[in-house]
Figure: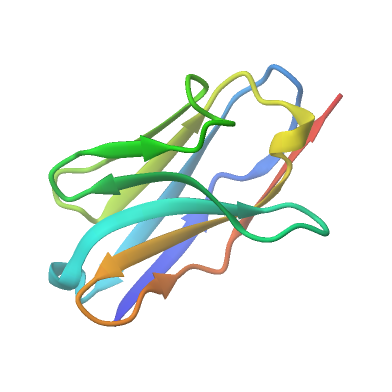
Length: 115
């Protein structure tokens, strides 16, 4: 079992930046990849970005060029640097860990971008 805790969300104006953090604990040795998802009001949860233990990254087209996912070498913290934020980026952002066994999810952190 992996426990995940997100932090760093907040309210910013369009064009601003936020840096989200996901702290992992527990059976981290089981984790092969981690990612960020988000869910806007009235919409289904969508993939934002993923990173493998080896550092390979993938991004949703909607955030490509604006967001950057990264990790500590110890694999205990994953970050999401969000630049040039837009109102449509508003939502609850969740951290996810996948690998051996069921996926683990954090409780989410709210990101609100005003016009």
